[in-house]
Image (tube, rainbow, N blue to C red; front, top):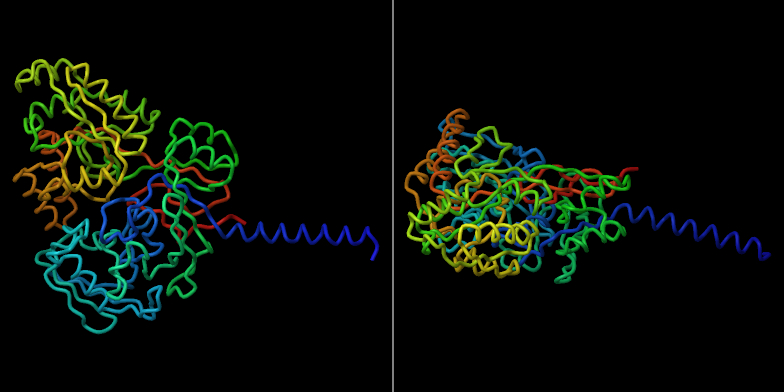
Length: 494
């Protein structure tokens, strides 16, 4: 064979290899995430970063929440509810297996629900299971759950990440080696770098289009921008560099989708620690914050002001921002009435997210205007969880609560706000026992008003979902009804 044909053949082979590699790449996806999860078991940790990797991908529950916030069947293919609203009978899918080959059946459901509500449970959302009275195995594919009283949120609650079904054989090792029933199985975790999941060939349901998904951990906003522009990351479902959004909106290679989340961003205050045990001090803090300046400065205009702990997109939302409107003169007056005419010194612990670090600087500057000197203490996410969330060792902090339908956190014992209100707790009990939509709306609005008046935290803004990804990527969520990167419908356009 002459040199020309050898060269042509080699070139053709190179093109073929290149095309094959390109096609293969279209079944893989690299996603950027800001926070590294402390572990990968959503039934044993409160960090939303856990669910952002494993929810609907690796683990599944009886029900699931979709991109619109609707409740859909998952491991339960159907269910019936008794006339009194207390007995739920779930019919399970057959021929379902966990990733280690263990068969899934009704015993796994009973184990998971009983484990979550046990006295020794470490489930981060234990109140979700408080309504359960008994869990009975009717047959291998049927489970009957009896509630203590009707609960209008029960099916929704069973769709949370904390309610996924796990197997007794692997439950204790799910933190480092998660084994679920989902369409993806866990592959590797390079700590500080990335987590890789791959398609589960034995999946019981509709197969996913992706062969592999890599969650690349990139906490730095500048690095996130560079990674997207270079193609090292093809999607950032929650992009952290708000100031760079216009750059990507002008670039046809990318799709920019600004949606909403369940993330109520608050300035948390330790209600049992002086001076924050004084209502007037907490009210003074709230009136010292200019939400527009905060949103413009920390979020580059992306975000919706809130005056209570409720998402503006919810039908029961009422605008209570006037209750804590920006009024530094009123703040000083309230501080004087509380016995702090010259202000006081305090600390502000800030976790890594941009909204917290940048927002904290703005808020600290505004607090100085009313005589409150807040020392900024940056902490890593694991430190925040240990010191603030678990240890309640803090004065003030900033965080977005991205769990869905989580108004009831203000009714929990020993929650990190240290807020106690019998009136609020009673309203939450009524909400949980009510199925009527109109009545629930009335109760939700009553609860919002109580929180706005009690000011257990300073309500700041609703966190936006700034999604940026390759224009050829389809199926990622526009909004964030729950903290998740559900990849079950994600694919590359032809």
